[in-house]
Image 1 (tube, rainbow, N blue to C red):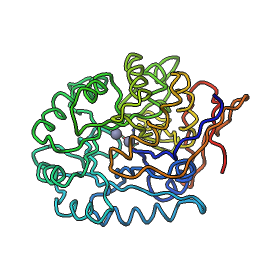
Image 2 (image 1 turned 60 degrees about the vertical axis):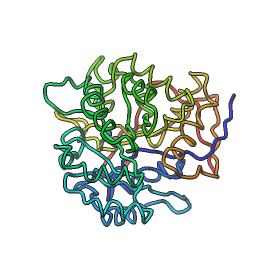
Image 3 (image 1 turned 90 degrees about the vertical axis):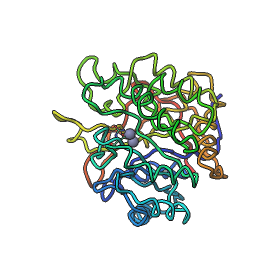
Length: 347
Ligand SMILES: NC(=O)N[C@@H](CC(=O)O)C(=O)O
Ligand SMILES: [Zn+2]
Ligand SMILES: [Zn+2]
């Protein structure tokens, strides 16, 4: 197959940041994607419905002319979040999910949840009104190895929470382990998972072999090969519980290339090319539409996109810039370490 037309995809986990960075990255998403779940981990975070409404306006103002893009807004869950504000935001149509960051788990998560008891009133309200909870599923205790943090989170936080609130819809975001995949597959209802582009392509060797490579560092950190293979099997299976969330997370190069670099990989610009490559390798191009365009809307209760995009396989490799320039500074683009031949055809 050398040409594939699918419904226009959506990105169910995206960092757009703000200001000059927002302006520099938004076009790489709106070129291919119709909608995206927008992560609220700004500084300060997007905590209230009013914050989300203002951020949505800034995003729409930055969308390049001619692109149609709908930001799906989320709220950053804190121990002080007001359940009435969350419900009002959801009922108005603005708020599509609430995001749980365990405090200290990842970039800008300082305002996240330390004591889950304090978040229960909001979580109970969400279960009642059917508003999904998106989770960064890692524990943060110093005694848990960083490669085990997802598995330990499932066992000690997620499973007890779901037992206590079985009606709460939970999206386990950026699943990186076989443990996560198995947990989702074996659950009966109200649990789904997003998978990033880069976790389908790299394992932990990419970060550490032959020198330390900060542009492959993200959280949750890439794991062993056995986990990558489990992610690929899940993404290409067609199982409606799994869908694309790129977790494209731009940081300017000086903040990545230093003694204590930020976590995050920038993939918006070449995600669809990378995914077509992966799905072709797995002989599952016929499942790409389910993963990128159908399963996510079904989970979030939204209509699928009516527009389509066409991917074409070129004989010569398709080149992407090594870095994009933004007003905030240069951002290195994810390098899959193999030539890309698939590209979205220009409209
Ligand atoms: N994925 C990352 O490595 N980084 C994200 C935060 C997150 O999604 O955990 C970011 O905001 O930079
Ligand atoms: Zn995260
Ligand atoms: Zn993220």
